[in-house]
Length: 605
Image (tube, rainbow, N blue to C red; front, side):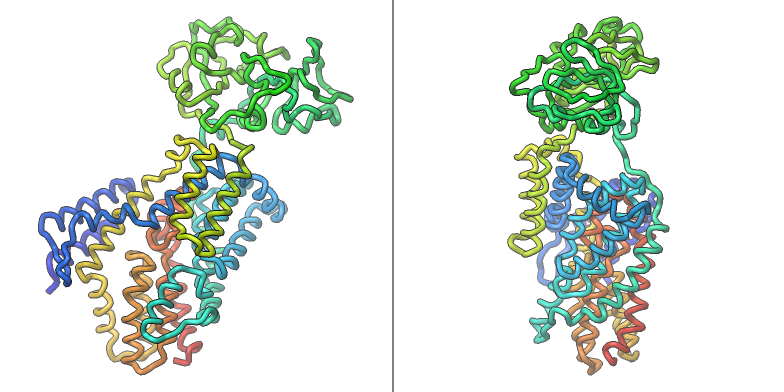
């Protein structure tokens, strides 16, 4: 007769999965609710395992210090560093051109490449490599992130099933079976693995993207806005715009900025611009979106801050990672109305610079310093985040708080890429544990100024943190109470007397379900001795049963907690728990049926 703790654990797990799948409550509430329930059950009525060890709050809360969780959080911060420096924009643009005019073809190339690479490189760093590239390509091609990131995780898992080193699960099973006298070679699972991966890839590449919801990414106010600001740039000696020549009456070298007026030695020059080359001390009156101003600011600060004199010899360094752009509206009755920007006093009062002005009515071509502010004008302001926050509650300038956005640290893109490459290489070749590489990389991103503490804090995903911590608590309770072993033994009892092929198929299905609840590594460790024992009892080769453990433990597609790559893509894809159930359950069934049909033939069972 199962005891109270075992029954309570099963009830809590079932209720938690139903609550996640219903999406009726926020994921954080469900995670905290399940964690509280299991803590109450084992706290009110103490439980001791078969070895006499108590299962209490310390063991149940250990999941929040799990290395896999620390790895995922650290990699999210590293990814934020890559975005904050625009490091992935150039490679993403090159990959995007490979797809031609097709919107989804470059995504298809990347997914196929991820599957192939995952066979020879642990699939976790492979997903880490491609996440920032896919973020940029999806934005460039106007593809919903939710359509590409679950396929990336799933295809990397499928590719990782084809060789011994493709997944940590494979290596773990190889280590366990070695203790029982069975050696697993590098390509011993490749034949069946390739067949399973090929069938699964057809679903992932051609069916799954159509099933995923069109869920838009949460863009900042600045990213959404295409409104044009008018601003002013004075060129210092080392400004990157110096030396750009006009072509066909325009200056394409200015990127997304459009030159409306060039002032040279106080003489205005209007377009079209012919036979002109930008020189030191030129003042450019330009228009562009706030993204265009942000890019220009990241290349060189000099001249964009109209209230600061510019040293023609040295110029100014681009601003650091704490420098933000935001928007503020001149309110009706504002004391700034009628003043020019130079005489507004915003910089001495708040420590902020006015980089551009947006007005609904047409503005004349004139220097920014000559424009008098009017109620309703939107100012593009720049400064430290603390200085921007000081505008809260100001009745003369109404801060659009959600518009605050850090400028990209483009000059530090190489540093960010080098940190990223170091993480991938050291973890791929097992020079250091991946958790050490990831945490070290996150710290280096902060120390080198690739991103600020505020940006790192924004990268922290509380949904993933609570989901993983509470799920590990439930898995710990299930293992300690003997729930996982009970499920395994019950399944074997039900299949008693069946043919080896039926037993193999049934065992595969049980493991495929358990891997999405316990995690892939826990399932592999638990079921490897069971599978070897079943093969011995049936008097058949252990090879198909070892393969079943590997492939079933890797079939962790139906929940985000099943495998680390699922957790990695959860944030960038803006996924919910139910998305994995809907997308992954059919793939689990496909892999199970394919193995059940092909394994008896392949292994001559």
